[in-house]
Length: 363
Image 1 (cartoon, one colour):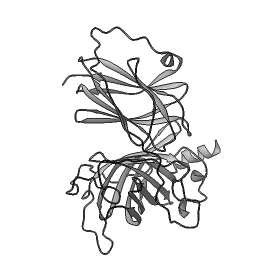
Image 2: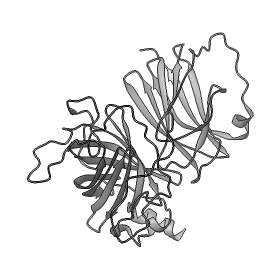
Image 3: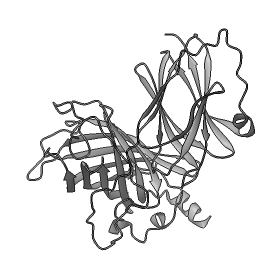
Image 4: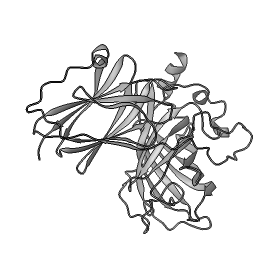
C-alpha cells in the first residue's frame, strides 16, 4: 500500500511497457519500451521492436513527459542493433502516447510516425515519411530482453505497481505517405512480406546478463493462426430471446463501452493487451456463444457481424475462461464499422464479465 500511494502521488512512468504497434497498412509488430523520467520531466529510454527471426531492432530514445495531460512524447535517436533477413534501410520512430488505467492495469496508447534513419549527417526527412500507425502498450514487470542500466534498482521494475500519466508530443498525424513498395514501414525497416507469422515471446525470455546490452534474436514460439468467424445476419425481428447461459448469470456483466455504429457490417478483433500470458476467452452475442475458449495473442481473433434492423441493440460479452499467468484477463477489442474504428480495453475475471453494447443506426 505504501508503494501504491507513492506511485499515485508521484505519477511515476519509469519502467517497462510492452505490446505492439499496427502500421497504417494493418501489419502488426511487437514492441517493448523502457523509459525513465528525471526531475525536469525529460525522458530517456530504449525501444525494442521485433517480428520474429526475420526482424529485430533496438533504438535509443529521448523525449518529454507532461504530468498534467498524462502524455508521453518520445522519439528514437538512432538504432543501436539491427537483425534482419532483408537488406532494407533502417527507420526510426516518433511516439505520441497517452496514459490510462483500468483497475490495476496501466496502458500507454497512441500513434507513431516513422522516417528513414540517416547515420551520418543531418536527417532531411519529415516524420511520417516512412509511414505511421497505432501503438498499444501495457506496463509489465519483466523485460523480454535486457533491463537497461537506468532502470536497475528502480522500484517500478522490481515489483508491479500501478503507473501514472505519461507525456505527450504535439499532435501527430497517423495518415502519412508511405514508402513506394507495398510493404509497411516498421520501427526499423520494412518487413519482407505481408504474410507474416508473428509469434510472441514468453515473459521469461530476457537476457540474464545484466552487464551488457547485447541481446540475441528473439526466440519464437510455434506459429499462432489467426482465426476469423463470420456470423450470419443477426435478426431481432422474428427471433425468440435466447436463454441466458449460466456463466452470464453467475458473474456480473460490466458495461465497458456503448457504441453507435452506422454500418451494419461490423468487424471485431480481439488481441491480448500487452504481455502474452495465455489469457483465454469466450464471446457471446445476445446470449449466443460465438467464440469458445480462444487464446489471445498479438494476432487477432476476428468476429464478423452483420446487423439487421435500424435501432436494434446487441450485447457482446467477453468471458474470462482463465486469468492467464498475470491476472486479470485483459484484452483489446478493435471494432470497425465502415470507415470508423473504435477500441475498447477489456478487463474480466472469475467474478466479472466484460460487456460492449452496439446500437445500429442506419445513416
